[in-house]
Image 1: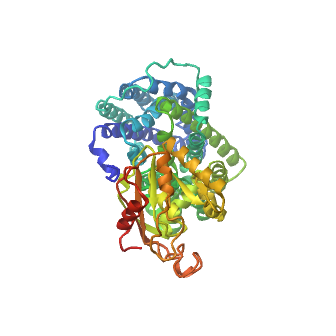
Image 2: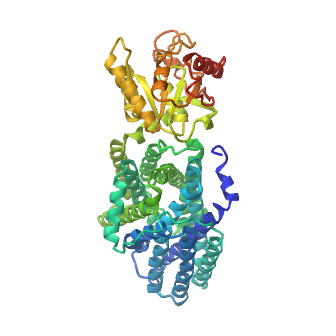
Length: 629
């Protein structure tokens, strides 16, 4: 199942009605918010009298305020109540909110529109914990990245379509606001119809006593999240993304008008480019991650976010808009604007690489009984980060920074935050190094990976061809692997970082260091007792002939102490590579360091411990490898 396309989920009831409910809700948000923002920016005198540069930020600030006030309660409700029933209640609420908004547009009552912004923020606050707690309840772990990617893609396609629709409708002479009102009400009704088909989703903690104090509940949930360091820092990482992204999303109207000299159609175009970029990045995560939660994509994403935010400053600085605002055709005729659009697209695409694995990681690693409350705590953090982003943006713009300069500051801040987070959680950086190895130096052909069990203790045995064998296995395997490695490899700078971060077990021969060898066997036994996946290279050395050396009896000792299944794996194509010992020392022949070398990894069915003798395992691995060394 893990190798099937993520798009198949759209044909299943466990996903499609939920997907459509989210799609219509996100689209409706943006039809309304963008139409209101355009009116407040381009017709400020009649619709609020705000500074056009900051209108989007003010509306965004009102929208996120309910996240701060009500997320803690929303998370508790999502854990206590059947999620399908809660989704239908939220969609009923959306219809009522749209009636208030419709009155605001028809009567040109700005106070009602701001009330609508706040109430739609409340709607999103209630829906957020349900959304991310629903997915792991109905999807397998191997489907989480694909499912999250589909939801993120759908959300930003909805943002794109909602933005375009809101811009088109509000621009209709004389009737624009009325058409926006009718459309938002129709979308709310469509979302409610889709919600009616969402399957039952039993409460994860039906006996939960609701704590109505948002401050104490939020603090409690953050404390629970802090017990798992990786989960908590992932929450902070996602919140930083909202800080980063909100500055761009809330300033596009001002950027288009004040820097690029474009009209509201240009604003729609920029938002469309940004939304498509997020959607493309989210969908690519499934392919790039190999159907598993691949956190190595997170540093990759953060690098791209900084690079293209900085280049956006280079691309747009010094632009002098004409006195008259340009439409789409005039805007697209200027080639300098194409670089701006490319930067926005790539910045957004790398944001997708950054966000989807983080959401999937939180869903897979936090306790199911607290999942919605953890996500609610994350929503509060997101809101607080966005509030700080709004304050910072307003302060910097007030201090006479231009919007391109603001984007430069945010891009550089992103680099600093990324370095800080990856210093605190080196697992992210370690996985990035492993992921880059397989997607730049090598092209890995995999077979039989589904034979590695998703849980439970097991020992992997593999032939030893090069210094990067363990990295190849780690990149291909869906589960974390604890490798038993020669202690001397721990002295190599890059490999030492990777293996120490992945909790590899150093070992030495009995002749060289008998105490270290005994500690290694004790660590292996404990790891297997804990249900971990342990990998060993039974040859005890990297081959210098290309052929397998006899498997040593260490595997027998491991299985006598802890009888677990043994999974034979064969590496193919690494002999003769830069990291192998063919014709001399490894890493001594630079011409062998060619990108995208094709290699293979084949997995056989697990063997019972009773038949997993060194001789049987060696024959099994040799047969798997075949003639491709």
